[in-house]
Length: 159
Ligand SMILES: CC(C)(COP(=O)(O)OP(=O)(O)OC[C@H]1O[C@@H](n2cnc3c(N)ncnc32)[C@H](O)[C@@H]1OP(=O)(O)O)[C@@H](O)C(=O)NCCC(=O)NCCS
Image (cartoon, rainbow, N blue to C red):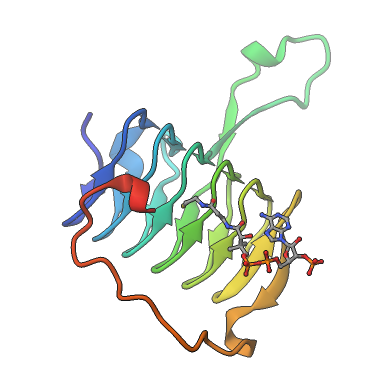
């Protein structure tokens, strides 16, 4: 599998599947937990920044089937594709689905089980189906005690 770019300290846990890997670009310190699926289109890239943590069973999907014609099986109608951008320091919760054309801004959090159908602003926490911004990290007080960040990205399951 020849991935378009893989930064340093990138971890894939068990079960990763990548479609059109030559159009997938990964930054540094990216971690994929178990059973993730990542696709780019044949032309549209999927760009994942630095320090992005991807929870278990997440789907990042840059391709849709076309379905605009009736009487022809969707199977035969071809595809559309749209670039996905996931900026630095994003955390994607378990089981989430990121759909074609979405841009997730830096520092955003996607809650478990979300379906992200549109852009998510930087530093926001988005949850639900479709994902909506629940609050902004910029307007909340950090916790009094902050755990030390892991020194080494040894397992994707730390995502
Ligand atoms: C999004 C998340 C980080 C927020 O955590 P939190 O700050 O502790 O949030 P809270 O539990 O206090 O919930 C705050 C509100 O958001 C809602 N909420 C939280 N997570 C949600 C989710 N995944 N989907 C829908 N609503 C969610 C809560 O119901 C609550 O709503 P309310 O204010 O209307 O009652 C967390 O809920 C989450 O989804 N974490 C992902 C965990 C995961 O996937 N771990 C795997 C390792 S990568």
